[in-house]
Amino acid sequence: MNVFNMIRLGAFILSTLPPIRKHKHEMDSARADGDHAREQEWIRLAENFWGPKVFDHYGVTVDMSGESPESLPDGGVLFVSNHEGFGDIPLFMVAIKTKQFGFVAKGELYKIPVFNKWIARIRSLMLERDDPRYALKVFGEGEEWLRQGFSLVIFPEGHRAKGKGMQPFQKGSLRMALRAHVPIVPISTKGSWECFENAGYPHPGVIRFHIHPVIETTNITKSEEGALSDRIEKMIRDKLTEWEQAEGKEA
Image (cartoon, rainbow, N blue to C red; front, side, top):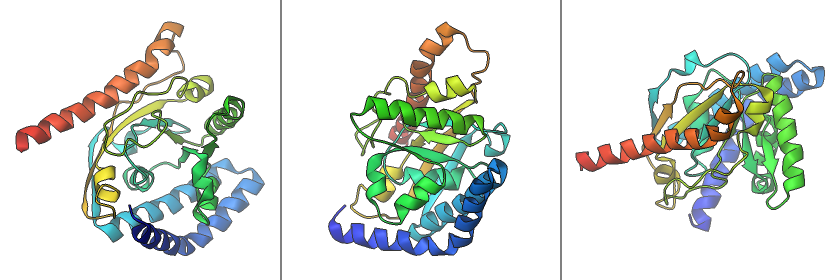
């Protein structure tokens, strides 16, 4: 994406934030009061507004499949997804309207003025590269948030695939859910790179979003825990392969 298109996109993103100023005040008030349920609800409402605003503006739609978002369990969950591009952030806000969630993201997002405050406000975790000690501290914070009923989205590839295909998962990315004993919800997505970045600017298109069956972690055995990351990675990758094969037949 060239500099001009980046500026245009950034200007539009900034224009979408003032209308949710009320949500900001309510989130901050609930957080100060320690009212987790109220904070989660106001984050959810802000996300329900912001994500569709971005997609509607660019003519992007979502093709949902798999489990219903309405059937997701109560309380905190860890969404585990492949990561194509930055469009995955509003994508989740369009596809999952029944729950609040923050993102486990790289620290570079903190360099984006205004947006950095919002991504932190919705209870996102920022990781710094090549700092394992800091990562442990951040994951410990995320573990506590999950116990408090907040949900998180993690992209175990560690970076955007940028149209190069799904990359291997980094080990240890599911540890928060296992330690907090919260459900894991695997997600497969396809199309955000094409819609938001591949052409150098956002354009109309369809992004696929598949919700796999929920994986409970409460009574998981040690052997199952060790194989869990590979199991979820295969589940997500198999769906991507299925979509690609179907597209090949249609062509």
